[in-house]
Amino acid sequence: MTDAGGTNGQWAQTAMFTASEVETQTGVAAATLRQWERRYGFPHPVRNQSGYRLYSPEDVRDIGVMLEHQRRGISARLAAELTLRGVPVGHAGNPEPGPEPRPAPARAPVDLPDLAHALAQALITADHAWAGDLLAVAHARLPVEDVLTQVMSPALVEIGELWARGEITIAHERGASHYLRSRLSALMEIAGSEEGRGGGFGPLVVAACAPGEQHELGLMMLTLALRRRGVRVAYLGANVPLGDLTTFAHERGAQAILLAVNGDWALEGWVPGDWVPGEWSGGRWVPDPGWPAEPPAGTAKGGRALNGASNGASPAATRPILQRLGLPVFLGGALINARPELAAELGGHYAGPDAPAATAIISRALGHRPDAPRHTPEMP
Image (cartoon, rainbow, N blue to C red; front, side, top):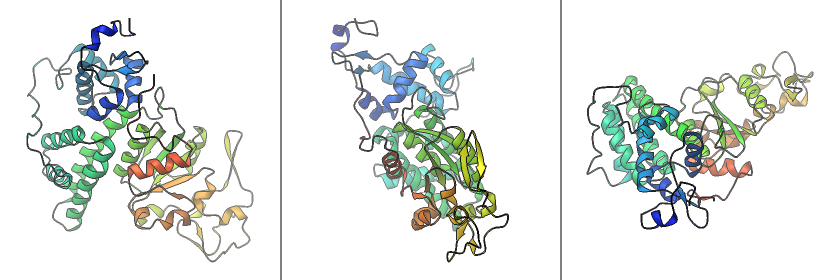
């Protein structure tokens, strides 16, 4: 008997899929499938003679149903319950049948640039049904990381350029961002809970947008990519003060901080007085007694000491501000991509130009499976 209650002979004649094959078809990582199995009793893989999980076509179908429930804003736990009960997508809590979902386009753009352009147009016109169809096609063809970098990101760039040229309003841009934020939120939940409890097994990284930074979609994409690689990520969102961010990270025992900086506006709040250097000791932050009440003379925006000026301050007072936080800080975002050298100037590390590259860089720096392939074999 297998652990699913059937014999090997019962499923040997049926098409079965490994966890990696299921991930390719659905975008759900193997670690998440195991998490769902433990938490919700779903899906129901069997084991082959080597102990590896194998999933039936019915499992793959039900995984797709659960994803669709989540994409409509339903929590993972309720989505699993609805899937197990066989409740059709769109009928949760609705006694009357709703409209049938629009079928995926039979002739969606083949080339990725065309697919990204079509997504941008769908979002600008607020045709969310068409946008969902296009993303469904993208997920069917590509790994999640490629959907992020080759479809979603170019669509966002196109929308931003149209807004900059005055061809669309800020309302169009906000509507598009809101839609993609909801899709990314669902994917982030699928990839693991906020700190990966029950599924994550790697180091903990705290991810946030810098003070004054409101653009969080790029950070959400990187959070998703890291979680899919097994890194635990506590996602804090937009506009987080450095002091509060660092206190949170130390309290949670994080190994690193990930900070999004998309424009100069996100450096405005980095004046030295906003963060007093010191060390985390006895469950609290102990300030450096040599830190001056006033910023040292010659200190620029962002707490960067100019021309070696110290004005009698302690050595900690003249260190780049991110070196005072007591943890490695990885920086990403449009401003850092345009000026990678700024990361080191601020005392941090350049995360990389996109989500897959940043995931590899951060994982390697933290010693977390640096050479892991995107689709890893299922563990017995």
